[in-house]
Length: 606
Image (spheres, one colour):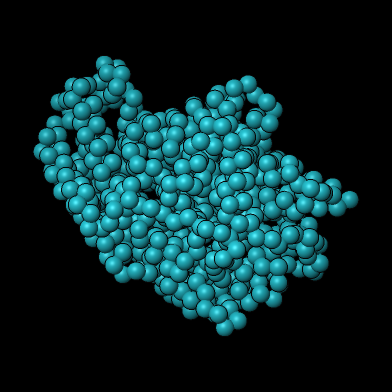
């Protein structure tokens, strides 16, 4: 299946503002000039023909190929992936610009079905590849250096060997994938179509979530209660989507013999379960010294006896509420990137100049933000919902980091450029850190420094603590669903069981907050995605400490790591920096950076 892009950052955003300046919009012409473009029809026709001829040439014959034959086979597969990816990227990006448009939704659905049908004959490839003996495949790789370059792809495919079903079943499941995608679209369209009444003004979800960061506490409370009311009014739909998706996954996992609901994600991330468990345990153990400690500080700053959920992302009383215009945001990020290495600035510049960013908040536009790599012979596209808050500048830095990473990795080709989720957050979080440090160095006084440090701590807590709490919620949800249908109240209870533990005793939870699981897209689009954020943040914190220590040749090693894309395992990529994510103490190093920022904030109080 060729999946659509989806928002990969859980951010608070809202409606547009004329003071932001001229916000850029996508120009998708580099993919196709329109849904009726002759090039699109040409590519669809080519794809159908190429898939059929590939199957005719290779099905039942993989075991007989020599090294040169297998190389040609995988290169043909790569070209098919590229054309299918280009088509689906265009359909998906166009849809996410306006998810409420019936024509765009139909076009995306029709294209998805065609691509799925065309590529069904290719299902045999991974199945036959996994039936090759290890010694036979190793011998072919030894004979041809160009073929050996694809070893990471073979390793990834063969990791699924124990969970492989019959050829007929695999083709059936491939075809059935479009049905599961329909539930994802139902979720997207339901979220995009929700209307929230804030003091008589109808707003979409982005506009409403934005009020949770408003300086006026009454407005924050109004928004939180309206979110809860609307979510509650639609909770049966959201519960049905989650029940169906979780049950579908349980059936798939059971038939494949996967030991846990998380196994598939770990395999696709090329990360060992024990590494994820070590990360999860380290973060949960650190809740008291991270989130609990920080929110107690924030409670005092806000002058409250107890915090409510609408205070979690409240601006600090001493915070400057000014709006950051788009031109200033661009300069801030570009200066930070260029200061690290001029090459990084050169890679980032086209995103601003060539229509590779869609920044404005518009009715029907998908919420959140993402960077979609499209295909290696085009370029990535970045989507934002930019509102001019300092956090939005960080989001720009984050998504631009993804974009730079995707541009650098494109040299690996279609199959090797894609980075596992656990490493996909490296450049994005590093870009955020560069931008933050640049802004922190420019703080005019201690008060401004305090606000910036607190903002960074909040972002890190949202990236590490909140995402691990999300991961625990998903683990509990999928485990509970294996015992039967879950009512909305059942899911609400699971959500609350992780919220109090992660946020700590500074909070009270209003009635209705138990429904706030409903709007998180990751749970629907990509189960267990969320731990990748914590993995990426911890990894980058450790990486940045190496950079701060002035390690020789850091910049060159960093570029080499990004250029590697998905061609190397995390152990290989981190070894040049003297780091090893499989060492449980590795995560303590990353968490220590967050704790150190909180130490500094506490010292300022002294």
